[in-house]
Length: 100
Length: 172
Length: 344
Image (tube, rainbow over all chains, first blue to last red; front, top):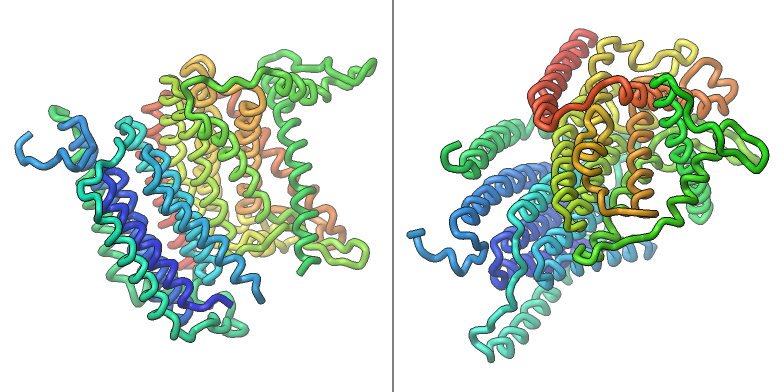
């Protein structure tokens, strides 16, 4: 039987990897992918706690988190597309002035 | 039974390796594909936690729709490969890596006294309504948690309208 | 534990062998049906040595020809993705067949064998998940070929597939409201009765509308005419599989026919009673026979439609999927739930 601590440890590790991705990477889409990885790590925590405590609320929250992640991905990618159209570059270091 | 531990270790290794691959690849398309690998491994872990509905929904929604959207955007924008990183402060890694090791060790120390090691038994005679089945999520979603459900529908409407407005070209 | 594993392995091998043969002969069936609809005779010469055999060895000849073709990998293509994409298309197509029930139970050498490989209690969601994953093979094939036509064909094809997945899923919800379970084995077992003719489509007659929506959506999912603009020969130079040759091309074709067989099998299971039919209780081996006949009729229907109806243009296709089929599926959910409300 797999102890709960293993699931929580794995979730923490994935969250850390996602956070490192947000810090290191300069491509806007890769940063976005790291954010999705963080959301998934949190989903794993919710589902494991829900399984071990027998409460369905955890899984329902995961459902809502997935919906919110879908909405956020749609809007975020639309923003990235409009930035790319204006500046021809996805490097977040270059998007640092309010003027075009 | 060591089988469950073996399954967990296999899928955990796949998840962590794919997650590291997101950071190590320079082409964003390969990063997106690695994220899909992580999502599939996580879905398998959800099945070991008896959350089969969430596992299937994760593949349908996350790996099947959201990541397809990412891949479309990467292909349509023809995102270029990342240039190699320029490290601004050279000696920082000798400070960062020991600290990271310290924090990971601290995490293991904090997690060790958690004694929960078995999933609660499935209530006998009612296996179709156990926590994690479609029945349990459906009834909870439409009775106790109806308000979040309706609010997410408004949220998705906002996201659709927002995405259409933001991605429109001038003069359309 | 090893007994269970052995049983799974043997059932999977048997199903794989039957499927590969079925796909090969589906290509022959397609050419024969096309020929007879177009008032000519299809391939009828390939036989064994001196015996003509009415062209039944044609798939074997086609397969051998394909194996001997040169296997080209374009120079500028993303090498790894180019090779993996056909497998990504084929594997989900094969994986759906482990949850479909082919019969009830047969007794062989004192063992009771259930005629389904596994029994998932989210079986229907599993099938939907696999159709969602099947999009990746196409979009990655289009991208990795490094060819404008492939890219356009791949993007159009995958956009079409994800659009019609919505109508597919919502029509499945309508059926789910009647059956009350996502488990395919239980759905089929719930259609026993009236000497094996209590199929869902007779028991709840309004399901015929849902079946039409489901069938049209599955034709669009599997990229068959009238929705095959992204891969039609005269349109986009064969779309996403332009740059593929030899065995990789065969894998794409296999995936396409397997998807067609999957869609027909799921339609049979949900609407037409799966393996049910007269006298199945007494002769359990009649179950797979009935199942095969029903799947065959639905595949024939798909091929009939292919050679009768002209192709949709891409924007007409997307408009049809989003503006007509999706609202129709939602209206059907409302109708189904109203009917159930009045039935209980």
